[in-house]
Length: 434
Image 1 (cartoon, rainbow, N blue to C red):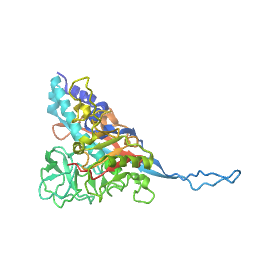
Image 2 (image 1 turned 30 degrees about the vertical axis):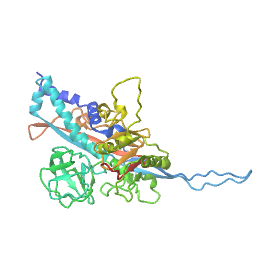
Image 3 (image 1 turned 135 degrees about the vertical axis):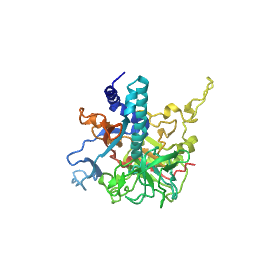
Image 4 (image 1 turned 180 degrees about the vertical axis):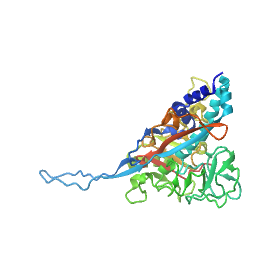
């Protein structure tokens, strides 16, 4: 029978960076689609990105022997400055689990499974919410006012999981909770998109109000990444998030820092997805910055609605009689929906030859197109969250004691969702889902 200290060492070895990277790839579609690049920060605590804002060159003809022309102006440049956001997570394991895990191989395997689920659903799901949101770690966004109850319906599949402690925040305010403050989630009904908290009742809500991790959005700032939906936008984020790269999109001449948003007429009016609408968005990216869209992303509800339009062309061969495979576009094959380094959210669907990926938690009524070379996850020394003892000092205990009969592990990560050319993104808003 193994000693408890041996089991602790086995956990430490098992939860190296490779395993955490594997767990991240299982849970996060966006994580797999985007490349990850280490971005060391200077003494100013910033990563500085030079951006060309204009190219005022000149090329003219001249008469034989005539005078040379003069330069009209110098090319324009700007600097986008970013600071990687710091994150930490804490998880613990009971003395009883450690004791049981040392008794036999089955018990140890079950303990590993328990920890795996904890990491995927409690840590990486929250990272996923950061990557897919609007800069405030939205775990669920209200489609309209929903007051007077602890149960609130959100407009897309909620990122929340049972036991997560959340605030219900005012969309127009940096620091106002709406009847639910620091309350654990007690129930989630996925088909109806409803979230129930253990205490508190939603009050004074409106469309756009949202759940987020308790205490993570406040008047001093948002403790989250910028989010895909902020980058795929033409306006500045909410004030609590701050301007992307400290560049004001609203300033005349800063259109180079705006993505393309195609909304209904007037905005908010739902309309169906059409081939012409899709091609328009892809063409605009090509026209604005010479960028081709490499990936299209939406939630599953949109894929269900436009299944017939998006499925690949179907060909029938008479020489062989067999059942139709998944390539005829009937449903989604489980193997293609699984996560993996090269198949994140992969489906049988495509549009104009571009793969269409499913991010089940993506916001409702929206489709995003991106060029993955220009949108990436910047990170510090470690690509995924890792225990402090593995980062800073191998002599630091992997498990630290607590006031309870548990051991605690603290994990750390620096990261930010970065973009060096927002014109490489397009967002279609107001797409009818049902």
